[in-house]
Image 1 (tube, rainbow, N blue to C red):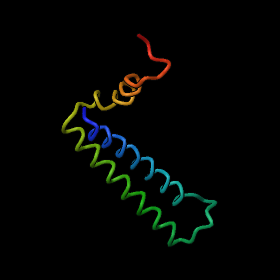
Image 2: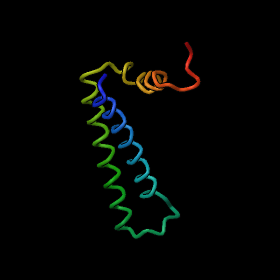
Image 3: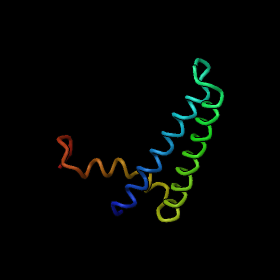
Image 4: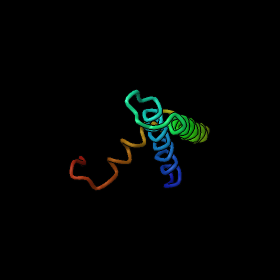
Length: 86
């Protein structure tokens, strides 16, 4: 896996997290935001989740699902961390 595809995986996860945060702000009962702002947060959340979804689909065309789910664990063990065995 090249650095480009690893960055795409990180980008896809970041889009999903960003979308969830926007959804949380849009759906909060205790929000002091205006209804227009809440609708805008909802729209940004949908957009972020959509971009993340299509990025993930593009990655699935290139790699198996089990490989994509294994990337964070594999990349963290390849670094020079003090907990590495061997």
